Amino acid sequence: MTSAAASRRRPQARALRRIAPGLLLILAALAGPFLAPHPIDTPVAIPFAPPGGDALLGGDQLGRDVLSRLMSGGVALIGSALTVAVIVTTVAVWLGCLAALSPVAGRFVERAADIAVLLPPVLGIMLIALAWPGGGRFAVILATIVLGVPYTTRVVAGAAAPLVTAGYIEAAIASGERLTYVTARELLPNLRSTLLALFGLRFVEAVYIISMAGFLQIGPQPPAADWALMIRENAGGILLNPWAVLAPSVAIAVLAISVNLASGSLARRQGAVRP
Image (cartoon, rainbow, N blue to C red):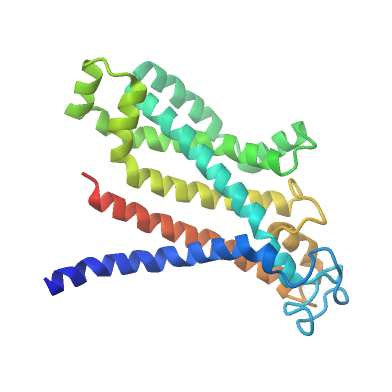
């Protein structure tokens, strides 16, 4: 019994080690604005001042505290990426399951997805941002959702297709159950691991797309505290104060990697216990 319990605890410990960094980083980013030592728009040192004194990570191009802006710059990015991941995954789940359950609707959904997937992300963001000049971050979120749904729909449809031929699915359809009922009660419980993995991938992709848009100054505008915007604003002074660029770059990378590891670990655990 002791060895069996220990063998069960080992996968749980490994999963916890993968989940904890992402969770701690998200909690730190959410609490950052309340713990920042200085206002994000108040100069505390000379431009590109080295670390020291009141600025532990030095100053940015206007002498503002890099640490305070770093602590305050992750909330909008995480909130935007989470919004994109939830909406894309939810919409794609229903479209993908509909495509798998209904051949007529499936052909239409798959053809539309094939066409939409061909649109490059940068071009899609620029088109939507130009069509909605005052949209700011909301325009970037909308573009990321529009660009993410087609690919995710194809993945869900491919994962659901083998399940549709299962006896219990055919029995539910033959008994006259609605497609929404079959999707919610029969398909989704057997797609848990796929959906968790897709959610993590959509979150990571949203982080990168929104960060890329911020670096191109599509979305958040100065003087907003945004990690991608910090990289662009301070790139010219990287030799004077490297932390003004390195700190937000590392924050974006760690956020994406830790969430990806966490979602992958959760997906494997769900797949292991799937009935």
